[in-house]
Image 1: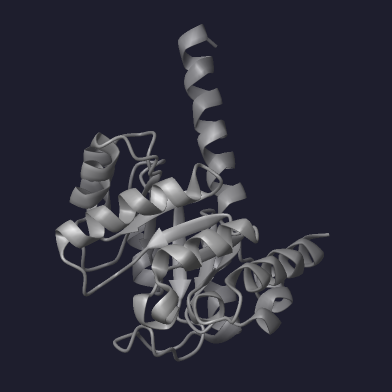
Image 2 (image 1 turned 180 degrees about the horizontal axis):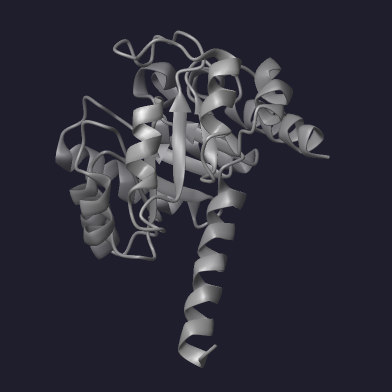
Length: 235
């Protein structure tokens, strides 16, 4: 193996490990669920409590508002967790060009094609993709290795934070998806603390949580509880 090839392999392994470590307690922001305290306060408290990833997802924000929120979230997170932008590749690029530490993007099936996203954001960025059917997995499997870093799989059960969600998979349906791909899969959609052990056993690489942290009386306590439950399930 040449020195160049070896360094490329090492970089790929380091990137994959960064992603896997960051998926355990994955906060997805929601302004409505955050209430009067606001998204940034929830993000700060959740990361203080041990959240390992934060996805800035605000469907009703303008591009400028999302950009400003992402830049401010980067200041709050301060490199302590993965910071991702939902859907908006342009906002990710703009925030990164402004000097914000933003690690990547998460896109859905109706957003830009994920292979195009990878070409735009580069090899070092984290790219997540929503997937909840066998056809989605087939499409991912046909892509070059490294196009997608992880899959967001759900919804697990009905959730008000995404009213247009597909039919709930349940834990058994999640297990079928996670067992059909080598990519790490994050469970999302109506996930509760009590689901931690079952979803870990079903093959989850982490839990993506919206209301259970954003709407908690103390997001730090809620994030810590999810982290502790995940650690216990992983032991």
